[in-house]
Length: 77
Image (cartoon, rainbow, N blue to C red; front, side, top):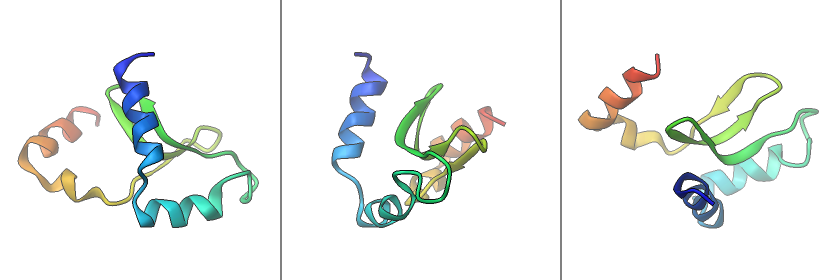
């Protein structure tokens, strides 16, 4: 198992209260589409993803306001 998958597994085990609450409502196809949580995509681990709808949901994203992460985030656009 690669390091991204190990980190993603650890993040799934240690969800924030906000992530737990959202996951309660979107898991098990409750919205008619499948979501995965803490899923590696390229160099990133996204909080929630619905591949069918090309939708990524990020919560608790204050780390994206840090200078080094602003630069990293611009690389994907």
